Image 1: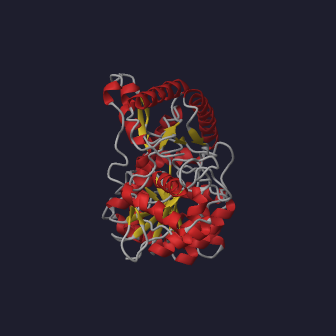
Image 2: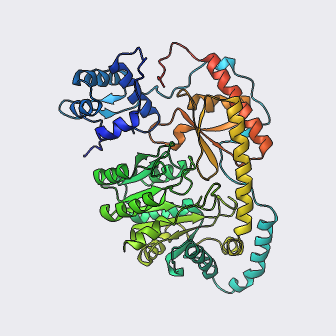
Image 3: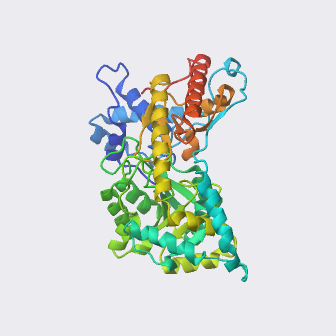
Length: 490
């Protein structure tokens, strides 16, 4: 089996300034700590082969003995597995994510807990009620038939196709399938595009439920890091995506280029064009999750990745999925797939083994909402903008050592802590008044112990109470921490 490898240049880039001029540590120890930090942050995924000692020594201008010593330290700590004549492969020690600290020092559970584990919007108000009332009035036209719509009712598909056209992507009704939410859409696509054991390239971090869907199908996620500090491609690594697709022969990729969950980053125009070229070159179907596309806060997103693929004459290589769940209301379980006609036909045949169609009542309500939704979305964006500012202010005041990645949109902040204690923090936070989603939920094989996702979808007072509770839990964790435990050097 071919093992995916990371190049010496890529590793050197991610290491950055791994040894300060006043650093008292030996070079090999500082290098080992730097690589270990990248493993915890998910930038060097578990299962990837590191560069050879000779290659890395040449790129870093170090002696080969220094590289050998650094790899030896990582091997002894359980971060590398090696065998004679083969590259060293990244691993994760069994206890790398164990909770630390003395639980007896935590406060007693509190009754009013702020849920910061879920990034979802409340119902917009009377608009949902009005939409369902309109749907009820339209129902008699469907009561004379069997009520099964495996592709979706024409009126909703027309509205969805029109919204794509308004974004610069001409779309016909027969390119749309309505699903019961975006998660349902992803499960259908996995069933048609992949077989158990196939590789699926994913952003790293990414949406936890997508990772679970990939695993449950029997496929294997191949993580490619998205870097919160951004860059020319908005945080994505086109070379890494191309390399991962080629080295693993992945048949499918699942990516979130529009206000990425959890970072809020947005892939730029050049990156989208390059992603379309990668799909064409590698013959990999790229499934683009656009469920957050309407939640831009600082600037609208560029055109859909599918429009770039269409311009290359390979529109079939990029499939998009969307839903009403993120931007409107999670209780309205309506999603959709935009794909070429042949794939829609295949999906229709495969769907009968899963369900026979999305309920008509929900489709009618969604069609009513989406037909005139711009003012509603503008109000939702304004609300999210204000709530993001509240959370950033609270974090700056209460947890000044935490680093926030602030994307151009979305519903959450991706926050880096000074130490890899995310799992432990999530475990004790309810005792102080907050529920958290630990960073490793968004990664593969224990990555992101230094990160936590903090959604800003709740009311400002709840956000203030929630951040205060997280800060209190973090202080309690620091008080109870075993200071003799090895710590990553930042």
